[in-house]
Image (tube, rainbow, N blue to C red; front, side, top):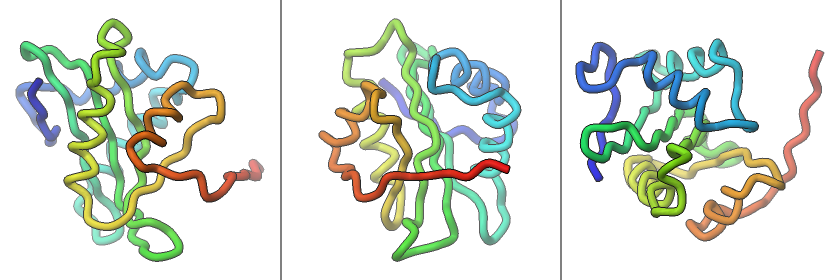
Length: 143
């Protein structure tokens, strides 16, 4: 398996293929394509209080996994990084791709990492095995 960091104007992987991959393989945990696009824009931003990276896993030059990590611009009470998306091709699940791509992403980060996961998401066990802990329950108020 190869790992590639997506960059704008990447010839190997297109931005639209990343959006489509995330939308297809996140299934019931997915966001609308417009929100995925906003996240990618933030991860690729060069502004002082933005940025992050998009890590792609490839097997035989075929996209099989993606992690999108953003910088929060904070530290301490809010971790420096937020793991927004992890997706693995449905046909490739159970082969350790999720574990490997998350481990590679964690290696690339400076500082702590947070993520949100629904209680009934099967990936929750993977995150726990990799050392993520459940310190808080997130609550949201939508206007």
